[in-house]
Length: 187
Image (cartoon, rainbow, N blue to C red; front, side, top):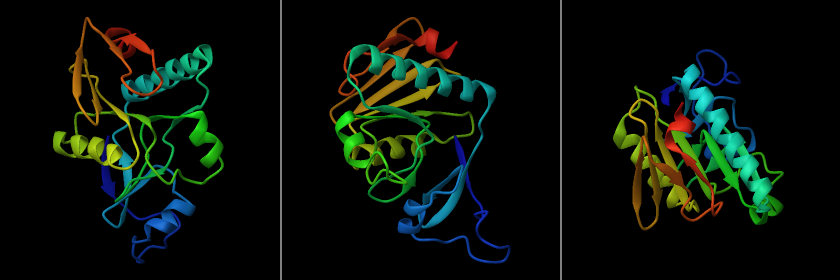
């Protein structure tokens, strides 16, 4: 998803769009991330992107309930990485972390499992860097979803696995046992 620097709706025209990460954590503006000291808007959402986001959230939610693993699934939920304020497209929070942080305005670390749905205007280097950012900030597993290529890259601390059309993608470290056909998720 493309992000572009913009002014916050809480900031008057002509004022700086710079706020601290701590301010962002207390009241994360809708559709905004905090990147390199500035508010940036998450843009580039298409119908396809939205459909995949909704499907993955529903699949993860249904699986965590049917498997008894607990926790919660979110879309566009704010979290803090070591350097930025992010909002992954889809994220899963374990029951242990939910009990600890479930009422916070923003999670003070990365979600254990998150997914980013890549748009045609995203830059590969930025998406890969974002996955590493999540992993360096408490995340355990990141799904990078490429709808146009029908690829899902699952990234963990120790490996990166590419799942393509005709294969089944599965979780590696979090939400154990979940799997889905790539073609079903990206249809």
